Each structure stands twice: as structure tokens, then as C-alpha cells.
Length: 245
Image: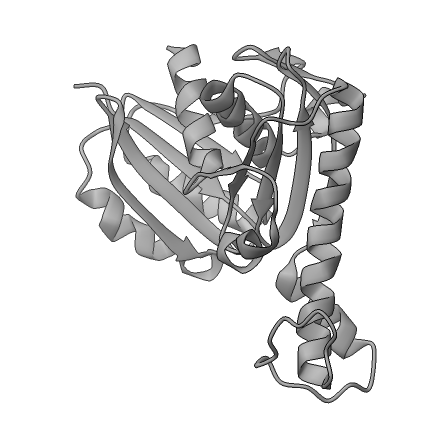
């Protein structure tokens, strides 16, 4: 049985999954500081026929992964965004500059949806990328994520607050004000991109795709149809792996 080992090496976590027979057999994640612990987890896996990796973080983490993956004879594919791959066109002026995680997520979204959509990933950063009805990546924005915005605000001001605030439309204390401001900032960016894409298409976007660790914090405030995927990057890596074979 051919096995695909997909690895999403991000800014905060390294996530991985073993895929075969159209299903995930096993998944896991570790903080980027604990990559060495993957040695034990990988030791229990069957030998993969393909290894695909998206890496957007520290050089040191890549070096650690290189060592861990060297136990298998197959060489890992460290993916780089292309001008065209898996039916998706990349409109970046320099296609390879697009992060491999965003590229994999776009490929997964096109495979899943097959029509125009926003591809929203809520991680350390919030990325909002636009796909056309023909599978063309039109472009996208990068915004600090929930914790980055909050930490930036608190480190650059004299605000005294805790992390216990709740979302309120009209906050009446500092904790709620910070929490609500962060949420409105991110939701505002998402809604703006949704409206811009709808204008570009000359019709409302049918359904969008959302993934990432912060989805649960934003999804209650989104008013248009959304498909939530556990890890779009891993899903896209599998599509790329199939294309490589």
C-alpha cells in the first residue's frame, strides 16, 4: 500500500499526517520547539512512498526535519509555489515568492470546491486568498493573527488588561474592548475581501473555505457560507503528492 507522509511546518507548529486509500490514517502536531519528539512518532509509521513538506518557518526546524526524514530512503519534496500546478494558476508576480502553505491551501480549496472562493487560514497570521471560477489565484492579503494583534497592542501601549475579555458590539471595559477590537479587525478584513471578490466575479461568492487553529474564534461572526477544513495545507500536500507520482 502506498503511503503519503504530509508535513506542514508552520510558524508555531509542525503538523503531519499519514495518508493512504483516500483517508488519513494518523495525524499529529508538535510545537516548533519540540520537533525532536517526532522521532518517536515517526518510528511507528510504515515507510512512506512519498514525503511532501510545506515549510515556512525557521531554518533550524527544516534542518531538524531533514535529519528525522533521512531514516527513509525516499527523499522529501519540499514544495515551492509554481506558476501552475494541480489545475491552479498562480498570479503572483514572482510565483515562487508565495508561501508554500498558502499554495497548498489554494490547491486543496480548488480540489474541494471547484469554484471561486476565499481561502482563509487563521493561524499565527491570517491569510485571505482569492480564487476565481477558473482556478486562478488572484491574490491575497496577510494580516497579523489573533494573538499577534493583541500582543502588539499591549506591548506598544500602557493598557492593563487580561485575556478574559468577551466580544461585545459596544464594549464597556478594557478587556472586552481589546477582545472585540481584535475580532472586528479580522472579520472586517475577511468581509472586505469577500466583497472585493464578489465584485471581481460580478456575482456573490458561493462558498468559502476556512482552516487553522483560530477558526472557532472567528466563525461565529462570519455571515456568508463557509466550509471548515481541519488542515487545508495537509489536504493540499496530498493533492500535490498525487500529482508528483
